[in-house]
View 1 (cartoon, one colour):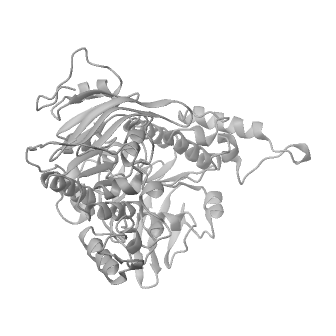
View 2: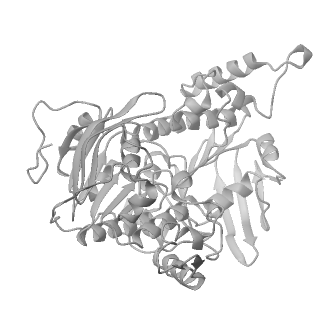
View 3: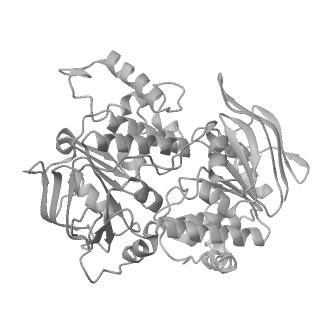
Length: 511
């Protein structure tokens, strides 16, 4: 199926989100839509999927104009969409989620679950998706949940599949698997619109690249273009893809962790006797495949999870039993991996979210009364400093793009004087221009004497920022190495290959 978009425009009041966009997607093509957060990519796709009505312009499928009053019309026309935030019912099985809204029944009006199971199996085998139709969605890893969303679209006979930031919440291994799935879909004739801001993925899987900046298509490129060329086209200026930093000058240990153990609600030991130190003026990177205890370990440092054993000390004081508020007041900054769950209140405005952990300070309150003028001034300063794309400080954070939501969280944490900065997936869902800015601020924080702990599934990010790297596998730190460690060795450590001899960091510290 051939898709043509002519002059598509969407205005919200005086704000123009999409400005006269033209786009052509050929049958069996992976067409990448590249752009910064807030550039208008998702708005464009929401019009194509019937979630928004265009202000101006036309959409054509195989040369015939179409208009959609809702997603049902889009699906009927052969257009499916996998959203960045999945639209699944967690307590339903895979088969039940796939049949939802298009239920088949047997005699007597009984749901035909066997037909749904068969459909899931058939699509799973055809496209190499490897999904169990009887599995509960809430028990599936994020990468497999995404496959369920793809199966839902294919079950509705989608010939054009929109993938909106599909790799934002995936591990490197899951990203590789998704790339293989996209290639298989393409080989069988499905057209794919791949919305992303990750340059390496565009080059790996794209046939054609269209770049959107501030609501307009500013150019097209081939996957042969360099990452630097694509970044400049996307941001409108040259972007450094390398973190510029001097050698660290680490000081004394600020945060000390000894024999930390965490048992999850199911009774599984997810953090096992972990010990490490975070020192002033250095970045300690935590590397590992997601699901090896990093999340629970970081949450225990903040008091979000109570450790079952071990000691956490900040400047020599035991904070093992401190709650989140006390930990924040102690001088620990926190950028959580799941911003929508732990990072902000979606119904609160940008202005309010920027002082969520600061409103009790003398700067923003006087007794029980908030200093609204100071809160407004702070919001406008942070919006400008971090280039948060929002109509106003009063805009609810839930209405922002994922990358701009992340900027709100990052801006709030960098506004405080910190002893320790803990950043978990700090650039997840953020474009290259913002990644450059956030990385620079992290290095500046290190250079000012803050102890920084970075947790990331992006190995490039770990290498770029870290002065020492602790590798986690199965709830344990299996080695502490330097950033000059070869990738092959790092991959083996992340897979659980424990070295025979003690591993030392680049400064000689023994793990």
